[in-house]
View 1 (cartoon, one colour):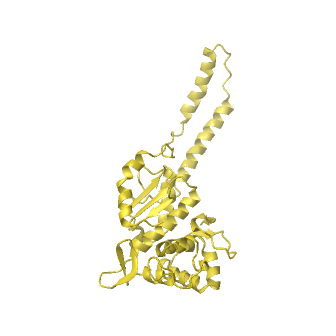
View 2 (tube, one colour):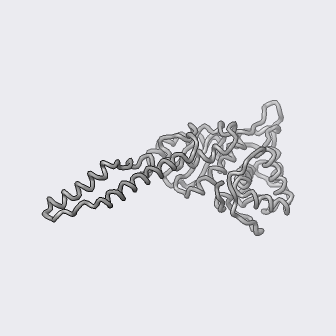
View 3 (cartoon, one colour):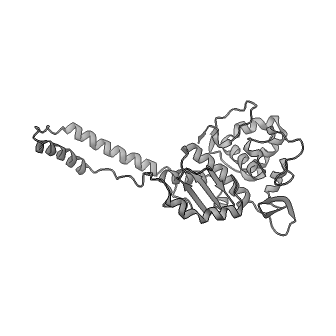
Length: 296
């Protein structure tokens, strides 16, 4: 979901109060470190001593049990190391102390899949753990996501919100060209902004659809909300459901125009990062981020 500039400013001012209300949740980084071999043996020994003090005949130390415990410790350490190695070094914008480790890893993986020049436009990244009413918000340089959704949905939401960053922060016009009919809140979007040619496929201005437009001309119901959600949902559809997108493009010239635009302007020389599991049956989905996919 796109947020106007003034609303975004207000949300950022509330950041302190939001973070102070974060519900306690344990990340891997906060978890108790794995026990050493010496600690495991000591724990087993102390259990036997406690039983003796309680006037109960102590059990003979089970060496096999100790060995199993040691193996378990090593497995936990190995799994933790694998988990931490899943991603490249964290992008600075992601590596925030108030973001859980698993969300840092997920966000880092998604963002490193996109062109670095556009990723550099993302200046602020927040994850909220206070059950926000909106799952995701974005402006030109900021993304706010809910940390209370499943991991696959978290990644899909980030792809959608990064569509807004690409649209409003990465693709820009210049003041040397005349204004277009499209505005991001009070901010005028000039005619040489690459996004204008995308908006114009289905819109005449920021609020008005082209005459004769139908719901099938949008990748999702939410995409028909305004030109900016049209862009972000279409961006996410290309990334997460490219096969279904291509199939729909064969049947619908408006969808075909949007597919070509994304391929030529946003995803030129782009390697697929996900495989869509949504099959086009003729029914337009409401929300791209809710469709099943697998990450490559």
